Amino acid sequence: MVDIYHQIGVNTDTHQVYNAITTLDGLSGWWTSTAGSTEINGKLYFHFNEVKIEMTILELVPDKKVVWQCTEKEGEWKDTIITYDLAKTDEQVFINFSHTKWLQQTSFCSHCNTKQPADSKTCIGCGECFESG
Image 1 (spheres, rainbow, N blue to C red):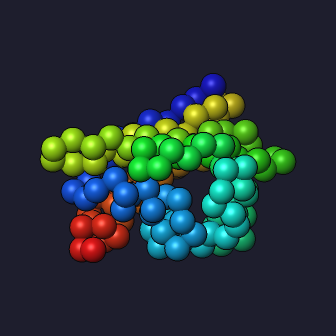
Image 2: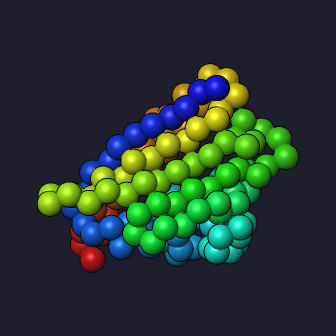
């Protein structure tokens, strides 16, 4: 199995980051068009042009942790797990991001390894969603 891990530091509070990864408006604002339910066991639907990815929310710990499982019937994300662990220090909030349980290393896995944190860094790290309020 192949796993992706990244840590992104942002100058904001954990509540703002948590809202950005647990609300439909938050996710649609920094990642891609998102629909569905934001409760535990709820289904989230992420739209990437013609592709729609379904995730089930496995865990929500307010201001600390979010875990999704891809529940697609096929495709490279099938059964993968996406986790956001949030850690606050005196200086920053660290977003410890992982996308685990890929079946194999592929060019799409490599694309996601650079694209996912770049999307997060573009919005979160540069403060477009958080630091400007």
